[in-house]
Length: 493
Image (cartoon, rainbow, N blue to C red; front, side, top):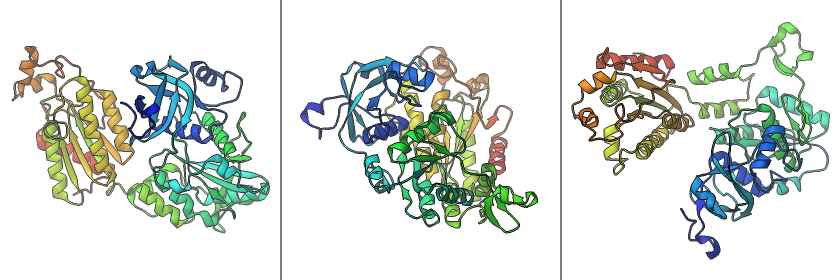
């Protein structure tokens, strides 16, 4: 596609591209200077050097490859408009190199960026600031950055106060955006501002977690960003070499059950140490809708956690059936929808394959590309239903594992996802074939027919497998209901 008509004439006919969420975050940090000394996306040599040794080709330390992947057809252009998901142009990339990533085979573009406008979307955008706006307004002396993707509970608040007293430092809170519950994170940190040292600043930064999950590289990147915002130290769980600013590791703290306060472990009698809640224990409390104890976190933080992770009985859910044509998935899906409506307490939406084809995906063919697009559309609608606390029941064939995984990612960003594989044998599906589709496919009249002339990739991540040649519809629905009850999404009768 080409860029929007509101651009200057010299840019209007340039091709446009919307980067993925991590690349959009990288783009914003490049444009604001938070990724200093980088001025654009990296080329092949720089990226390889960063991966191999944590340095750019000129020897400058840098922890992660900041790259831009594009479709191959865009690699022939000298300039490219980069836009946000709403189509708003943010920058022009002057292409210095088009290269293919040897690890993923993706095509990438490298080169400097010409800013067009600052991103202006998203909750709490009013709190976002360019690094020079913050760094130039900080008081003299040490500045301790807390770059976090998690709320601060009573333990972390106590450790932070102890560190700032020790360093004589001001505090710079940097909530790192790009997770599933950004708004809740910022609200939870705002909720404890009065518990932070006086003068603490809070600046949200778009820095989503990267797919490699390398905690050390993540800490190094956080330190570079914190340094760009004027921090002199960064709070961390462990020391690391090569950070842009020193990592300060707090003294171990625990809850003293004798005097009912959090304080350094060294000052607590061993038999008075009360273990803090683990992430799994905290998640279980939220899943059951039980209160989070005040000794663990302030009530305002607990309230935000409950909003971000509602009890399972009220949390949005997608039940996604997949299987061959004629496997019985539509019958089971309809039976499940009826059963949930009868039980009450839930808003239920059935997105069956044939109905979706007539309405949501009218006009699409049965090519692989259009079948994938059909599943993505179903996934998008299901994710929105899930986001608003409803139950979406989907029953497409969904033959490809990659597309099912994409739907799972969309939905789990908003709520919960259950995959049911209706694994009825092909022979039984053909025997049931009321529309004569299998016969036409075997006669060559229907190209790319799943199970005959096109593959069905059986899921290895299904939460439940059903074979309706061995189960009645009522029994199959019962199996799914049992799973939902055991998982906590549906009350037992």
